[in-house]
Image 1 (cartoon, rainbow, N blue to C red):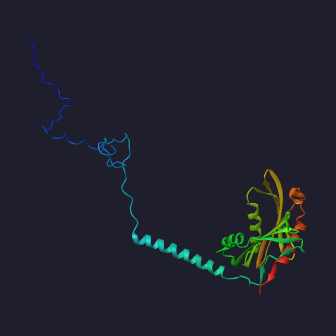
Image 2: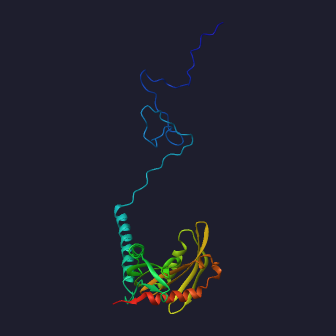
Image 3: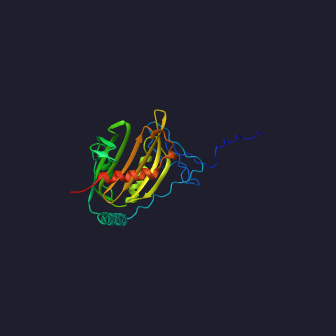
Length: 271
């Protein structure tokens, strides 16, 4: 006896088919929310297919809470008040404790009892750079840059003495002197061969020896500096004999005394 034909099985049992023309209902959210991304990280391009998230992508959390406007205003105001207070204190410090302007740095026609003669007054060019650097410094006021080169017997080919400094009203003279030594050592291709040493004379004079490569030759550059209430300068001397001298053989104490001599001749009373 033959069995009557069985009706075809549905792909999924008990799954009702929607009427013609209607879309099937959306799937229920999975364990991480909707299986479709709530929003792309970038705007969709026309005609581009919407990407689906990788399995296990965590849901986007709620947007962060915004701070109250009044709270932000209070924070900003507090910061501004604190900054202004610091500026006021610095201004008070900057305006107090400056010495009187009594002396100035000059470039006399000769130095070291006539041994060197003035060749170039560079105060209008290199001196202006010094003034620009010092402008606005909290521990310097009324600054004037002074730079000059002197030739040995009037001939710079035999030897050169360079005075580079400024005059005005200065505080922290020890720091200024050390900075002059440090600045000289940071010149192009310069290296410290003998570190700075202080000599307590009428004022403290610091001296060091640098080396520098010039046209494939290493030259020796001894240099000293002083700084007082009104003046400060570096003094460098280069001679045909000393340019090839071993840095360790440079007599720094004699160089410091010579620098003190330059100071006594170049520093003049104001007025």
